[in-house]
Length: 577
Image (cartoon, rainbow, N blue to C red; front, top):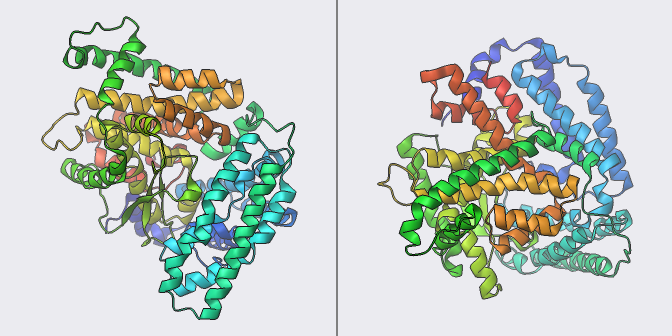
């Protein structure tokens, strides 16, 4: 097994750990165990399964316990002077402090539990208990049965919490909870057949599922009939947005700086795309006059290339076919170590996840390192022909490969394998979204820089068609930042948003309107892609300048990933030591 740079360093220096670090390490271990008592669902998600049978009722009492936990541990943190800790422990100290402060802010100021009904959905946790084989099936089903007892009280508390919700979050809650009902019906059939549970135990599970299904249906009906004549705006507003940006991204850049960088990068990409469009025009548009408007010309070239795409029924199979090609390329170019022992399973996106993103990764977490990593692929079942065609043009022959780089290899899947191997459990469980998404966006550029050209293994450079589509894809993360900040802090309208996405980012209408729905029900998350990407590229450029010819790309990648999913600004400090 490969030892990452930080793990190797920690092993070498373990005997020389200072007394302050030893005390802090002991405190961290106890802190994490106490944290899982407060957040059992989070514990299960990262592979710590002691509390799988528990479902926290989201009422005032549970929020009070959470606040008491956060404040008590913030007080405990003050006993450890940052100056006395090692660089790695300084980062852990900062991550813990940020997590605790963020949780307090979320309860006392953001108060999403009052206006976001989609925050209440039990389906995901139950579904993972069925899908993830971290323990024998009978043990998982018994925990499933115990957790079921909490579901009716869970949804009653949700109803009590909700005040003046946004219409958009209500619609999402209805869609996702309806989708999640399958977990307690179809999804449970085979596991019960395969189990060795007694008939009495199976009957208790069936009765529990009936009660859970009733509670979820009641919640959906309650939302559908809720009188909400003056709903809260889905726009977060600048004051709340800036604080959430700071807590979630922990970036070295402010929201305003990232907005300016995104606007400048958008123009840079347009310039590069026009040069390629001009060069490709005679080959693809023979006899057709090139429009004087550069954006119109680029759009026409993209539309032409987007005609090459898979059939709807072949979408998932095409993804599975491309993954080994990516692995082979990385090995040939010696860009990064890929651990062959970690499984990646491509699956249809579960119904309870529908409505936000079309592709995503589910990692087993640092406590469950041998578990499967799932690549969730959105289904096109039931789509009319025009909508499916629009979607497939967006994820055409070229973009689909870039999507796989981002979501799987060497993007999210690879980064999360490294994160789980980090010697710091804190950096694994308090993963920074800007670093995680930024790495995935960075790998798209890095692969093309090193000559990736799809399944053409004889190519030494990426084709201009691939570069054009990469720039289009990179516009996606760039414009995500412009969209998110514009919508939540500058009152960007739907019309302005669609213009940005379709006319300036060249997205298909299905993708653009899907993104508009997404920005209404999420905040800050859309900024993490471009923010992390920018910070990683800046760090790489800085190290190249400092090291000169001694800079090695593989060493940079493995060193960077070796620090776990910490904010890039902290990884930068550690790598520049």
